[in-house]
Image (cartoon, rainbow, N blue to C red; front, top):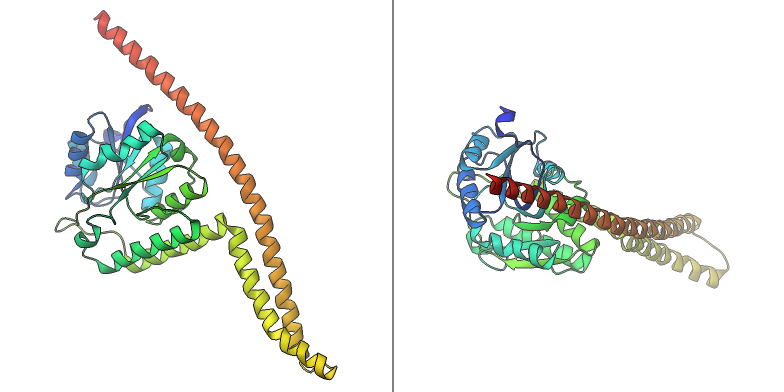
Length: 339
């Protein structure tokens, strides 16, 4: 069964459309056909994530290259996609037919023409709040956008969108850590932190067709996204994170210590030794948090330097793959002329 859908050839595509799917039989065929029509030169990859409704068969019949990821979760699927596929431009879209294919070329163009690393399909500036019938999803999207743009000083209009385009350099240097729907948040923060170029493209959005159910749980997945933001803020901005903890501990220690100090100046005695001892330990914790932030900040700076070196390596790899592709196309042209 697996070999029926597997494409054994590893090649560099001009545009690779990536469609992660889990039980999207009602819509995946239309999605594949729409994107084949919108981007005839693209290769459509559908990665099936343990579907039980015939999603893989329908996608294959519609003309997609179908592969499988058996670890459940969107993050796991995208990790597999990014490892297995080489392309100059990656266009990621959900298989639920909520993202219109007519915006595909508009989203892919900045990557191919301007070397943008990540293009975000912005639903929130168009029809999302009217089309989406889940009010907590609307609130959650706005909250996540506010938190990330506030914490990381960015201007990404739609953090949770599943309609994006990526460069080869982004895909091959992006460490996928999330297993589920937090992956979009992780992508956004990675692009911001690593100073990769981003662009917003306003797109239309339509709600799911009748009978098609969302795999996103508003509360549990929303909590995971917020937890991911906090975790990545700690990992990417350690000086700010631990500096804030140090400041809070310092103020607590100072607040309880000042009355003891005032009493000492008045009476010449310390009546509350337990308070003084706790203030001392709290101040030590504040100092430790501050220096932890400083040390981790130095490590982050070194990681950014290593990342720039990895970018250069990925650029060399891309050029190598392009030369192989161009040579293969020239050979095919010669063979065709000889015939």
